Image (cartoon, rainbow, N blue to C red; front, side, top):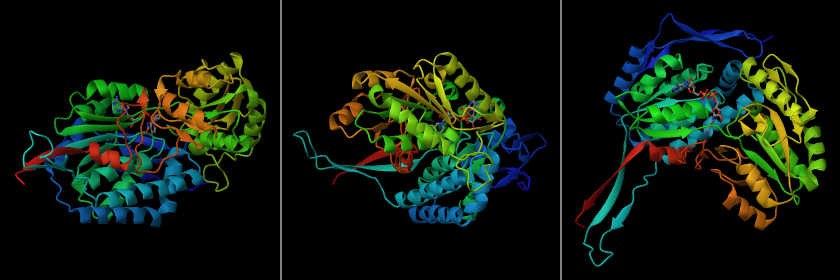
Length: 477
Ligand code: NAD
């Protein structure tokens, strides 16, 4: 039985702890026990947070930002167990997943701390055409006014890290609203940042009911930008609402793992099962569809089924389990319903499809019709749906591109002609050969096209560019 020290939290607004009696409850998805409560912000709270953020003009040197980011990274490691416990309690992720998440957040802060030391300024000599002059044009970057950030539940720490670390690296002030399902880790992170020396005006965390407060966040006269990670529906709503603001939208995915006839099926099946089940399948870049060519499909399905059976799942706090719960029972019921519909439409259930509350085990489906909802829509859970494709790369590409999403992809083949054709032909933001679609490092460009995003990337370096105004100045030199 897990003992829970219930946390009754306050918001953090420019260093003030702001509270009220209207509360949101956060519950442990495995037992439904209370983990904590957070206040529901009022519109005045939101306005106050943006006013303070816009009024504060950070003056931290690059060295000072570097030190704060490095100290935060070190604090995360020093308190890794406690932080991963909190992630597991509010999200139901296994301890393996939540410990991994803390180490990813370490990378985000560590890399941001290094990257902020480097100035990306450019110099253009102007005497290079017949109309040229003896001048030089230089570039310099400056922070925005307040940045609004909204994050999803699936990585309660790392999603927030990817917003705030580049914001600090560029001397910005950010107002964050974490998911109402997982707000507690974000508040803990705010405290670590303050402990590391961050001026509190540079990071406020507000909590509450999105229906009440998000429009104010999206339209605040004090902010220049909204950075959002979450689902397509809300992302598209934001794109229409946050008029004349810079928008960074990282939305849902429906990423394929593609297996061609020459692939090492042992290796491909390991990628398939890991990619579909890590973080309980709740990654924007989880393997959500497996496209395997018919000539090797029988053997591949056998291997995937055998490996799925090895995944241990259930009690998220048990160190032996690979997978905990999904975010809540409602989500698990949705997967169950979609799998049932796929079976009615002709898919074959190979393993799994057992639900107990918010615990839904790895579920292998073979012969899934490409138009079944379980693969046409984003199924944000540990379903492993296999679509058999003709032995023809153009047909595979057509099936892969036939959803509205375009985030990432993984490709299992050693055939160089195939590899170049996939890099050209897949309508996605990333193609990873012999890796899961989610493979990245925290500073490499990351993000999707089509319904997965507008093509503007995240990842520490790209985010630092989006969070700044680029100014040029020229000198008679
Ligand atoms: P969600 O879209 O339901 O919620 C995301 C955030 O939006 C939450 O903080 C929520 O409170 C807020 N929100 C709700 N209504 C809003 C409104 N009207 N205006 C503004 N914000 C509002 O997503 P979720 O269920 O928390 O997360 C899962 C989704 O996130 C999946 O689709 C997943 O693929 C996506 N995701 C994308 C990436 C990426 O980098 N592309 C990464 C992780 C997750």
